[in-house]
Amino acid sequence: MSRVAIIGSGPCGLSMLRAFQQAEAKGETIPDVVCFEKQDNWGGLWNYSWRTGSDQYGDPVPNSMYRYLWSNGPKECLEFADYSFDHHFGQAIPSFPPREVLFDYILGRAKDADVKKYIRFGTAVTNVIYNGSQYEITSTNKKANTTSKENFDYLVVASGHFSVPYIPEYEGMQSFPGRILHSHDFRDAEEFRGKDVVVLGSSYSAEDVALQCYKYGAKSVTIGYRNNPMGFKWPDGMKEVHYLDKLDGNKATFKDGHTQNVDALILCSGYLHHFPYLEDNLKLKTHNRLYPPKLYKGVVWQDNHSLMYLGMQDQFHTFNMFDCQAWYARDVIMGKIEMPSAEEIDKDINNWVALEEKLEDPIQMIDFQTEYTKDLHEATDYPEIDFELIRVHFKEWEHNKEEDIMTYRNRSFSSPVTGTVAPLHHTAWGEAMDDSMKTFMESK
Ligand code: FAD
Ligand code: NA7
Image (cartoon, rainbow, N blue to C red; front, side):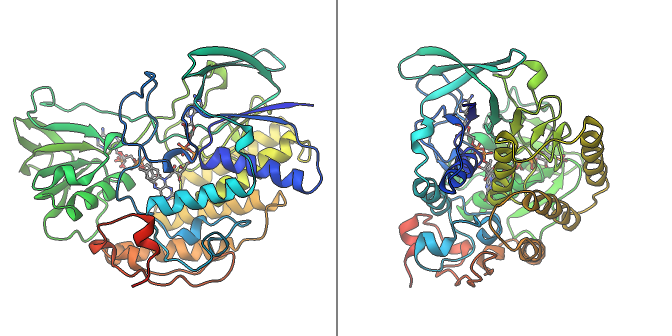
């Protein structure tokens, strides 16, 4: 029997385990599967931790989520085709739940599939070498501080790419008297109450961290974009200016000449695809983009088809796209999908990459990733789900954000799985200070 190693039990690793479990439930013989998870709990980024820096074993903390994080897209767009929100919660819930609610949903399916038995918690993969026919995997049991080596026929890398921060340096940082942090280490917006906050970046983290600071009482929030502004209609007390030039004491000077007092500087400058445990010729080297090259169907390593990567794309689609990828990886591993010739693979990858490079705006990006996900969906028996509806939802969501960045989370969407229309939440997002699942599930 072949052996499969999965690295990570975040949403992608759990999709992979679910895919195998579903095949087994249909009477198929699945390979011997081991999932390595360096934390003591599953759910990846959705498993909130107060920790930053290193954990108690000296291992870097992968968690990047923070308190009061609410879903940044409609939950309907990420719904699992085989495990609906209605089924999990037994009632319809609003479209933009807080983190704990989505964590509960992810784990609900994993428990339903009984996949915990495959996971080795507290076990970090520290080295992977391909010996020509197998992967020699070295892992460390962090608590016991013991190391072991094992061989596997297939490797699925599901260790995420939003855990290792990219940290640029600006003039004046060395002598800045306030606090400097990356969004990876941002945990609680309350810390910035009454402060002048500068946020650098113009993507999801910059948008949400800036809004959090505003919502929880920062005195002012100034966002410095590098290339393009997000351009939302920010509420009074928030503004977007062009790129930080330098810091001089507490004074920030921006490229457009704007100056601002700053108590805290939050770098929302993105993350690195970082796989220190992989030997060099197995490593995906890319920035955050919708179609990283060298991955056939966005999943299979071009140079070695026994290596799969899950979730390495920049993400509009998340959980159900990860599922489509996992179902595809499973069918490659189980021999149900045959790889085409090297020329066809190269052509296919180049086509997608060329299409990606022509994309000009978020609407085109949504179309691109929807087409990619549909293409994968058609290749396997992943259950029916209405990706056309998801495409429409994503575009409406973009439009809602442009209309009012403070209220887009108060909207309702319909399920691509059950058709259920989400109820409106009892409290508008701007006034909802308590993000607990208990409060969220209460009806007023
Ligand atoms: P991760 O969730 O990062 O999981 C990777 C797992 O691999 C972790 O459990 C980690 O401990 C483990 N691991 C890493 N290295 C090793 C190793 N060497 N050995 C063993 N285990 C290892 N998506 C949405 O759909 N909606 C949102 O609202 C949303 N908000 C986000 C907010 C933030 C701040 C961030 C950073 C991301 C957000 N995302 C959101 C996107 C997020 O990337 C996905 O939802 C999802 O968590 C990705 O799953 P993953 O399994 O690829 O990676
Ligand atoms: P992203 O989406 O990869 O965005 C990174 C941002 O960082 C992007 O706006 C970059 O600007 C900006 N950046 C990069 N380098 C710099 C420097 N040197 N100075 C200023 N700004 C810089 O990462 P996010 O953390 O926003 O989002 C990651 C996930 O978290 C996402 O999936 C969400 O769901 C939540 P650019 O646009 O290139 O000018």
